[in-house]
Length: 120
Image (cartoon, rainbow, N blue to C red; front, side, top):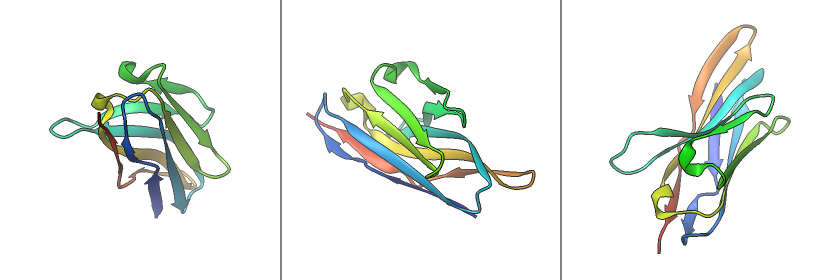
């Protein structure tokens, strides 16, 4: 089994910054893509940022230039640096990973989420 545990959420004023972390543990052979999603109240979950095992990153247009995704493969951890936060960034942020557990066995996993609230 694989577990993803997020941390780093909290309350912040507009223009502020937060850094989210997501650590993977368990039966991990290798981690392919690691993503951050978010879900605001009454809205569907959306992909915010994704990073490949080689470090190629992509972002949803609304966060480009403000958020940076990175990963530490040795620590099996993905980060999301969020700068210039806006009230519309308020959501529960979820970590997602595609993991090769062993041989040719793959699985997809979600963390439980961490709340980010941007208030004025």
